[in-house]
Image 1 (cartoon, rainbow, N blue to C red):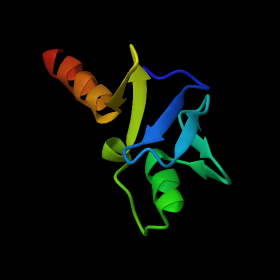
Image 2 (cartoon, rainbow, N blue to C red):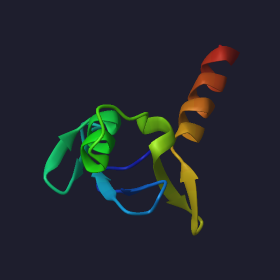
Image 3 (cartoon, rainbow, N blue to C red):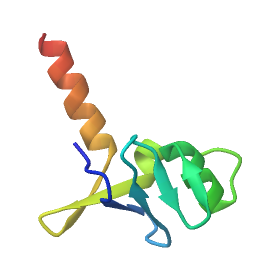
Image 4 (tube, rainbow, N blue to C red):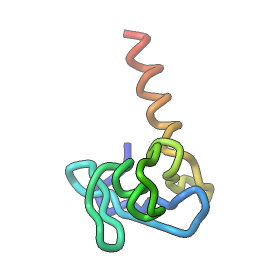
Length: 78
């Protein structure tokens, strides 16, 4: 649902990262999961990447958690 090279922004707008082909993120000097990169950028011990990161669609920033909810909804139908 997100393409390699697509940029994600933190909810506070201070940080951004790019989606890698394997689904992990790269931001500044860190590579890892949505949770690892968010925690590193915030200097925090942990981070809920689903609520931390946003992507842009039609000029609007949307939490990536929306994508997870869509996938769960589709899976529940099958």
